[in-house]
Length: 96
Image (tube, rainbow, N blue to C red; front, side):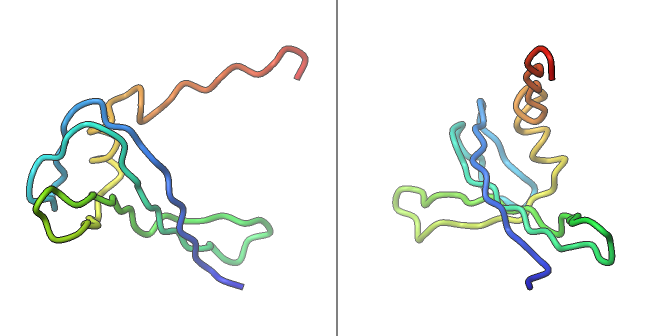
């Protein structure tokens, strides 16, 4: 049994962005964000702690391949803005 996992989520930036460890600003649009997590043991239920957050940057025209950059959650939240970072939770259907 593995004690770690990686999840991939596509996020959409509505404006250009640049994180601390990036060489240059990137245009708005969809990007893949990978989250590495490790299992917290010993618990009676599965719980994970984030160990790293990465963004995959596609190759620029004339560039030499895609790039993966480590980012921090606060950077991601700020770049996405409040609506995208904390999307509204849809209400529960009546009677649930």
